[in-house]
Image (cartoon, rainbow, N blue to C red; front, side):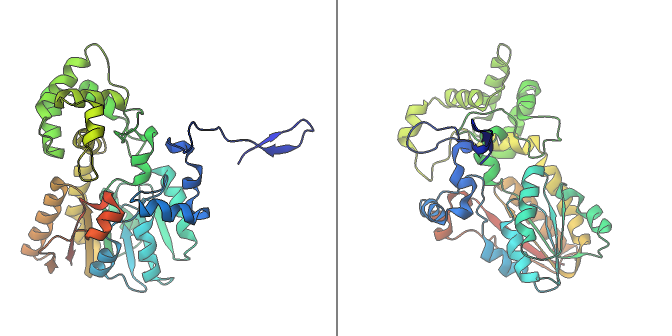
Amino acid sequence: MSQEPDSSGQDKPRRRKRYSGTHPKHFTEKYKEHAIAAHPELLEHLRAKGKTPAGTHIPILVHEVMEVLRPAAGEVVADCTLGYGGHASEFMQRIGPTGRLVGFDVDGAELERTRQRLEELGVPMSLYRSNFAGIANVMTKEGLEGFDVIFADLGLSSMQIDNPARGMSYKHDGPLDMRMDDRRQRTAADLLNTLSEKELAEALEALADEPDCRAIARQVVQRRVTEKFVETGQLVALIFDVKGITMQDWKRRQNPGLLHPAALTFQALRILVNDEQGALRELLRVAPYCLREGGRIGILSFHSGEDRLVKHAFADGVRDRVYSAAAKDVITPSRGEMASNPRSSSAKLRWAIK
């Protein structure tokens, strides 16, 4: 808590701004959740309700990832999507002080916070604020002949979803940003205000299988003539109009398994803003040449477009003999994991061996 001088000139704790109601609702007001390590009782309470504390992330399929990738003492692991460090910490515990972790993340603020958490484990590591498409360059820079394990979790971190300032949430109003890396020039607002109707409709269909892609694209192009898109709430309202439902209707009918009407459109825009499929294609192209003999790669995807790319790349790798084996069946979360962490429900894990 910050300090401010009192009448005697001495510092005293500055009072936090009070929130309305009995419980905090806004991301920035959830002080205890942002310091969840000091409030284990709150963590237990939130997890029992299937919720993720603000500013944190619950790693998905951890047991399954470790089982198929088998990180061992002394090995070198590339965690291509470091995020909150949930999978990374598990890797580090298994490779130990004789191993090494090389981590990638484009989110500069989260990267530094995760670095501080992981340093406590005492395992050598090198962290890069870089897209995982540059894994081959980093491998050369590190003086490595290859990695024993390469892992990528293509899902969005809860810290990014829950923070309205990032513009990735359709539940809370915020700027239409959606950039994972703030060094990128184009935001979601830029795309909505400049893409042609055809380009936007094709993106919504190809990247999210949005059934109302053409109607949404048409309405976006018509409305931006008189009002530019700036806030997430504008886009959410448009999607509700296109789908012919009101916010009140949605609140009455929603249940944990029902997809939010704006979810697919937000997904497509986020993928487009961050060129996620381009980065994934490059990773899949170079990964076999960044693995040591017997090295393992695992990729956790969250929608059909990503999963198809991974599935075909691994199958082609086996056919071309750059991989000796690959998963025949996709691995998905158990019912128990989906109940305790609903955000895991669409996860799909595939693996291959050099």
